[in-house]
Length: 181
Image (tube, rainbow, N blue to C red; front, top):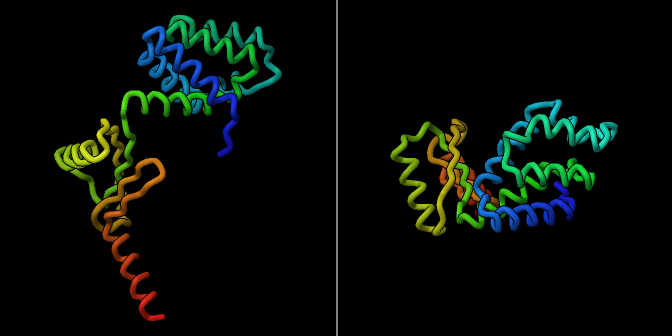
């Protein structure tokens, strides 16, 4: 996905301002909630993306919806994006902010995909091992994929650790194919 250079700058500016005003956690939560609503509510997405809705009208609508529900800094930031015609960058800005936040808080997002449902104790053990290895707090999401046959995969940003039976069989097949050629 292509990223507009301005989205990083806006995210960084909001991050720095939230840090300075000691409201980083509140602003982060606002952005996560607003992004979730943006993705699930067509009318909100239309408000952000529709160029035919004039800037002043957008501000009035956003004020009526968000003024008392989000941190004042987040509210002012939304109005700034509207004034600068940058609301279409909303998703990118939120994603960049999230990355800055997780890095600052030393949190590593991990996706755990297992062949069967793992117990809480197994998940905690995996989180502990990853936390010790990467020296970060682990934010883990787990899901089941029965096609793995057994074991699990761990996805960390751009890296996948494949400890599944399916992965082992695939590696064995490739090894056999290499040897036979």
